[in-house]
Amino acid sequence: MPVLSALLIGLIFGAGIAVSGMINPAKVLNFFDLAGSWDPSLAFVMGGALAVTFIGYPMVLKRSAPLCGDRFHLPARRDIDAALVGGSALFGIGWGIAGFCPGGAIPALGLLRAEPVVFVAAMLAGIALARLLRGRGAGRSATGPGQGTAGQLRGRARR
Image (cartoon, rainbow, N blue to C red):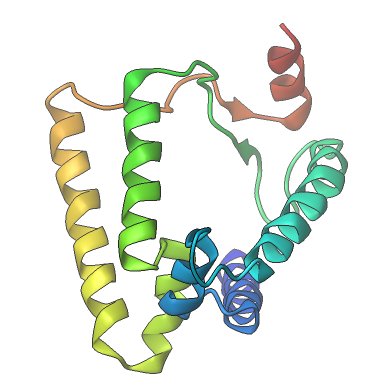
């Protein structure tokens, strides 16, 4: 059941990304082009996602566990360090250059075009490199006490 529900959720997410136009790098790049052919429509997509998260997240965390799991898997770390800032900057720069982020590139694989294939291959290589470097002590780890029931995690978040 968890695999089937994950597949269904992934298909719904991918359909939303496709309908919003985020699988089209030109649309994404136009969103970032404030001085040129700016397309603000993705701001509505992001605003909608934030609204759903703002309303839904507290509702979900009232549960003791997710519907298809025994516990929530939330990050344990709440600090902001150089690895987080650097990774965020690298993500944003890559998104601005390529017009793809993982959420848009993976559904775009269905278009059978070279660009998303190259992006996803580079993304997977970057993930492998990050894991290799993390194994050598570099990077940011989210392991630790971040796993448990929502109540336990909410209690920790308030401290």
